[in-house]
Image 1 (spheres, rainbow, N blue to C red):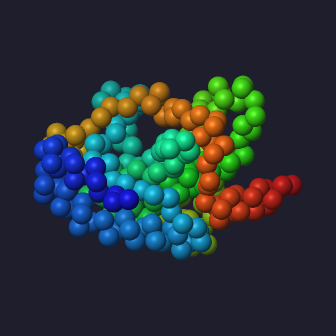
Image 2: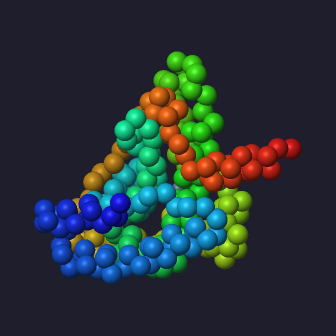
Image 3: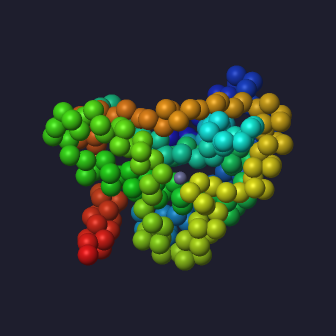
Length: 228
Ligand SMILES: [Zn+2]
């Protein structure tokens, strides 16, 4: 999958200026390096990822005018009757994030991915009740991650994640650059409500999914370790 398909489309539709798309393209090497670092540190493969040209912004901030930018997300989708887990990185992150921020974000999203595989692979798919409650549970757990120190052997990467993330990404420099270089320039944003984090996955699709066996093995090992 070409991670820049949607960005190219946005340029063709004149939603995103060509110069900015060029900047993203030039900086993709940092994102790729971040993904490689995560793979090396975890010994696991990164899920498919893509660059989202429209910046998702949540209006959940309690203060007036406060907006939360969703720089990256893990998105489970149903494709051909099974679940495909994708990581969405925004074009704004790639354009304006430092190398360290991209490393931390790629690693943080990976911890969501592993937790989601854990959750979906251990969901009991036999009862009707489960079918109606699955996505709500997934929503409630949207901020659950597998602890980075349990997945990554790269200690500097683990401390980088804890420095950059207080629940979600806390990077004032990036917020400022994106405020000036994206939002103030009226580049495309999309307001997202909390309900949008709900992803409805059918139990049939979950049951039919073949998750990465290496991730399943790791999840099982972590479960063993967590046992008292
Ligand atoms: Zn998160």
